[in-house]
Image 1 (cartoon, rainbow, N blue to C red):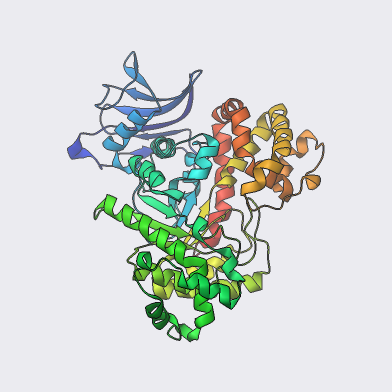
Image 2: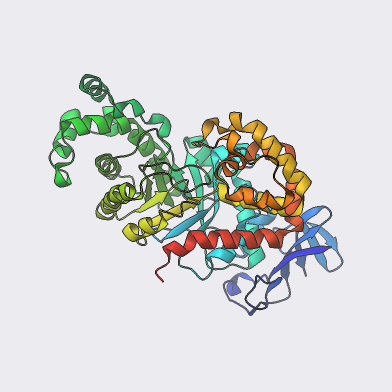
Length: 490
């Protein structure tokens, strides 16, 4: 039996929950053992030949199930035991984030939370560990419950009691919302991009007027005349004239109506209990102008949508797994206006989607947002997992790379990427394989093919990460330190 990392936490009866015991670790390096001493019952995440399990020493507490082995119980890492962990130790369940400065730590494999914890502890970035989009769940063959439970077990493993958030990302319909609420999510990102009319960005006046006249006025709970009176000439700097209003409504009003419907549904389900809500229009073809941002946010507020974050489509190019592409001065001038609008209309946080690896703009973003920012990452942790594979199982990684190159033309279709297969280094030496994770085109090829890779290589990839979990934790910490440092005041 090989120990992954002891995350022993004693189960305390209800009246003693929340009492913090002695935590011991060794040195400044990631410790091999984390223990909290309460009473007689302890929990451990262990690895055996049959996979990872939860080991409970002492009497089996209520709600758990497993196989007794001497004075211990070996329990599967399943939904029933995750629910029992959250019931016994509420700090292993997500809480709301609100307006705290935060970072989304998407985890496509369910193994990254310990490494994410090593990076965020000691910083003022509030972590969101239970985060994945519905699209990514489908491609990685996971469910909202899997995402939630993996975060719970990771938090338990590290005895991390400082709180974390959840983000059911890119939700488009009530069915997806229901699934995520049932799984225990308290944070939601609504994605109305299918209802955004990108053509309105360049339509002529007659077409815009026709679209304006045919808007769903009942759903928008206003009239054409009232909307004109509300915005034309009455916005800061007079930024919205009639032409700008027609363009903004044509592009976004149907999306606003859809968001309102979904947001009201979530509010009714929570019935006064707290939750986080973000709205995302980042996956559109054209940038969100400051005037459109003002209109979009103002309309949500007029319709009573209480949101904590907004993800506009910023200028420049935000591609998967690589740095920002565009003129930094132009970006800063535009972003500063967006940040000003978010402070004045909210405040609410600007959410930076496809936010990983955008190192050149992090200082600009923090300069203009301060605490009112959420940095959302996901695929970059998957790439660090493949880095570990390249370090420890060269033949497997070479197979994966060849397979990814074959799949890339198909799998890239739903992603905004420009990676060129002809620029992926050919026949690199074994010692050069880790360098692929610093190369633009190779990163994108490996990034967007994750679903196909997992369909074919799931078990061997997980086997490498189980065996070398300390390496995975270490590379994640190193990588996320680079993401977090630009958002620290010191």
